Image 1 (cartoon, rainbow, N blue to C red):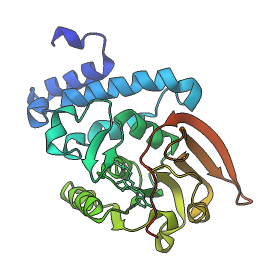
Image 2 (cartoon, rainbow, N blue to C red):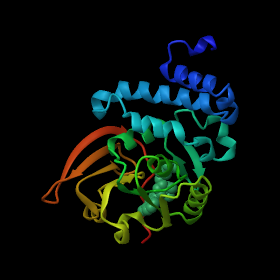
Image 3 (spheres, rainbow, N blue to C red):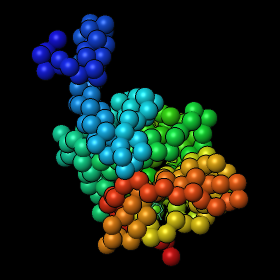
Length: 248
Ligand code: SAH
C-alpha cells in the first residue's frame, strides 16, 4: 500500500477493497481515490462546523451515498479535474453545482430514511438528486431553467437512477400532484420559505432550505413541521446560494 495511505481509515478501506479485487477496483473507477479524498475533506469540515450545524459527524449512510455518486459526470467537461475538489462549480446558465461538503451537510440534515419521498427544488446538475436517490425510495426534483433540467434528467436516466422523477417548472409552487413529502430540500435561496412547500410537507417532515435575499447573508435553515402545522426552525450555517427565481 502506498505510504500516503497510512493513517487514513477511508483510504485504507478502499485499499483493502482494491486488494480484494486484485487491484481492479481502481482500474474500473479511476476516480475512487479522488472521491475518498473528498470524503475525508467533508468529514474534516463537518467536524469544524459541528457546533454550528449540530452535525460534527455525518451518518454512515450520507457518507456512503457521497462515495457512490460519480460527481465528475455532473460537472461540465472542462471542470472534470476539479470535480472532487470541495468547491462549487459553474454548470452554465449562471447556475452552480454546490460544493460537496454542502451537499453532504444538506443531505445529512434532511435525515433521509429508506422509504421516504423527497422533493428537491433546483435540480441543477442533478448531483444532489442522485445523492438522495441512493438514500430514499423516491426523489422528485423541479428545475426552472429548461435546458438545465433536461440535461440533468437525461444524465440521471443514463446513470440508471430510476427512482428520480424530474420536471421543469417553478418550484415555488412545489409539486402538488406528488405531495405530501417526507422531506423537502431547496437548493436555491429565498427571502422566505415558499408557503406551498410548507403545505406539502408531512407532519414531522423536515425541510432544509437556505433563507435570505441574494445580496444578504443567507442561512441554511432546518425546519420540522409540527402537528399544528407550524415549523420548528433551527439555523445551521451561513451559506451562499443562487437565488430562487420565479416564473411570473
Ligand atoms: N441541486 C443542484 C444545485 C443547483 S443550483 C445540484 O446538485 O447541482 C440551484 C438551481 O435552482 C439552479 O439550477 C436554478 O436554475 C434552480 N432554480 C432557481 N429557482 C428555481 C425555482 N423557482 N424552481 C425550480 N428551480 C429553481
